[in-house]
Image 1 (tube, rainbow, N blue to C red):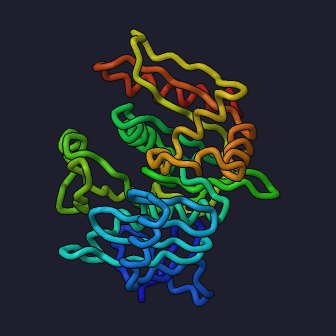
Image 2: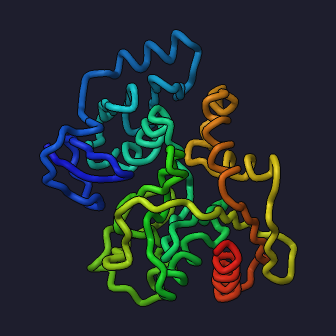
Length: 301
């Protein structure tokens, strides 16, 4: 069995995840990821409830996709069974993606589709639809001396002392064109076969592994604007911006209107400033956006 730390949790698993941080901590695991014979259990549940591929619950979730079958239980266990032609390592992205996000939700923790950036004061999140420039902006901020806690998904939880961001792993996902643009040696990278041609790029000393207090949220959109603009959101717009950028938001269903989820989102969104950055389409505005982020950081401080 392998043992790793991610999102502040100690995970014990029979799957090797090269991108995760190994640990030899002797404590009992918070989460177990293990293989089991669950195909019939998953398919029977989905068919009985007339559900096509998934059911997200706050105690138990079921998922079936092209790679396998998954049951996520009580925020403590992910059981999987690969389909024929798939190995546990091949379904690793789903285990660490949708499955772990469902498990975090059961632990009353939000998995936000974002980059989590650390500075001297705490952490902030940068989110946006694919193509908005989130990863490229993150790379520029790293080059300016910021730290990184997560590149694709961050865990956010409101606790007695405030709302905190928990780190993922010390790699950033970059598309091949960004890797080539920055002349990175592909021999030092981990290739990942996702929907897009991507690599895991080590961030080394820039990685911040301990939790940080959440300072503010930034959402990037591409619009008809000719210049980079920033707007401070208020009221329900704060809530909707966060809710729409949850990692699980693409999996539509009744869970999205559950009071438990809405309360979790409201606590996070109302507890810190939320900003919208508009950028023009087809124009390289990374430097301007990085300057805008710095101004926001100064304003919040």
